Every structure is written in structure tokens, then in C-alpha cells.
Length: 279
Ligand code: TA6
Image (cartoon, rainbow, N blue to C red; front, side):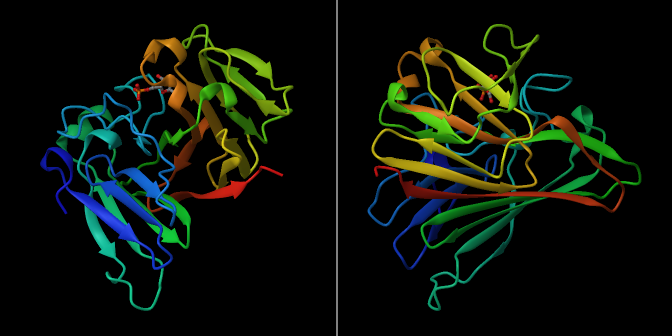
């Protein structure tokens, strides 16, 4: 259906009452609601949907480069229209999980930045109240390539000073807060990572289960496979109008790049769910 600024958005609705929306521009999931109607994701007030820049919020892709580097910040996948390749029946009479699959392949634009033939397949589905996202990158070229990637997920919090990320204690991380080009190597000693200033940390080899407590007695759990690293980012006063309202907890493949041979593929997935942490 038509979304903001005339851009195409795919809507998923589960029989249990949960819903999600994904813009084909950037294959960006911008909304995931619980059956109660509560929105879990966060879209920044400066987000635009007219394709003049990536959508700032929801679950943007960083591919084939996470962060700054040889190509534009976070790569090109968030700046391009993906194409729908499959959908599950809609409406959903047999209560199967509503699903959409979108693809991105090389073009003149991508080849100038990254000289490789590829097919990225992104599958988004609702499994009951859960949001599931899977990325598969297939090397359709005749030579190997490597890349870094992330799902740059913005999650709404009641207030950033009440937000906490658990599951990261004991991990090595790259602290990019002071100088993003020269990250400091640190080890996380907190049971729960809280926020008292600009935060930009890449946790290496993180566990498959990480939770963000949002300050309401609920947490968003991220259960992932294949991603390996977790990024925690809050821009603090650099975004004075909105930093209190969200925290980015990002599944990433950054510490070691993914290496994919011709005809081979790399797959990673994450399942988001809301859990009660009030007791
Ligand atoms: O994921 C954290 C990060 O890479 C930060 O270093 C910061 O630059 C942020 O993403 C925002 O990136 P964006 O290009 O979306 O404004």
C-alpha cells in the first residue's frame, strides 16, 4: 500500500493482533505493534520517506558496510528500493505467519561502490507477537567477497535514563564514543549497561540472547543467530529532540567480516519479542 511520501509499504497483520510495516525503500521495518496496539520500534522525528536519504528509524539495514569506510556510511542497502519476491497469503485465514520476502541485487549504483554480484534476500514475518527478520546474502559472482552488516534497530524506551541492556557482561567491546575512528578496547563489567552520555559500543561475539529493558517493566529480547556482534548506540545530546526516547540495539557482523565464496551464502536472523521483567 502507499505509505508516507508516496513510498510503498508492506503491511503484515497476524491473527493474534500483532502487526508490522516495512518500506520497500531500504527494506526498512518501521513499525511493529503488539496486539495491544503498543508500538515497539522508534522512528526519529527527522525521518523522511521520500527516498532522499535513508529512513532514520525502525530497522534500517547496514550492508555491505557497517559504519564509515570505503563507501558511504552504512553501505547502500538502506538507500535502495528492494523488490518483493514472495508473500504469504494475505489475509491470513489459516493463521500462518504473515511473511514478506524482498530482494536486492547489484546495479550500476552498487557496483561502483562494491564491485560484486550478489543477491540479498530479506524475510520478515510475524510469529504470533514476535517479529522475525532473516537476511541471506548470496554470492552470485565468480569471485569471493566480504562485507560487514547490521540491522540498526531503533527501539522506543520510556526514557533513556531508565533503559538498560542486559546480556553483555564480560564481553570485549569497541568503545567508539570518544573517537569513532580510533575505538578504545574495553571489557564490559556491568550486569546491565545503562546510559549516562553518548554511547556507541560494538560488543564482540555477543550471546544469542540480549535484552533491552525499556523502563516500563517490559524488555525487548533479541534472539539472534549468525550475527555474532551487538552494537549499542544512543546519540545523547547530539540529537537533543529525541535521544531520550530510543535506544539502538543492533545485531551486527563487524568484528570479523563475512566472507562468502562464489555460489555460497551467509545467513543471519533475529527474533524480537517483548518480555515482562517487572518481577
Ligand atoms: O550504529 C551506530 C552508528 O554506526 C554510530 O556510529 C552512528 O553514526 C550511528 O550509527 C548513526 O548512523 P546514521 O548514519 O544512521 O546517522
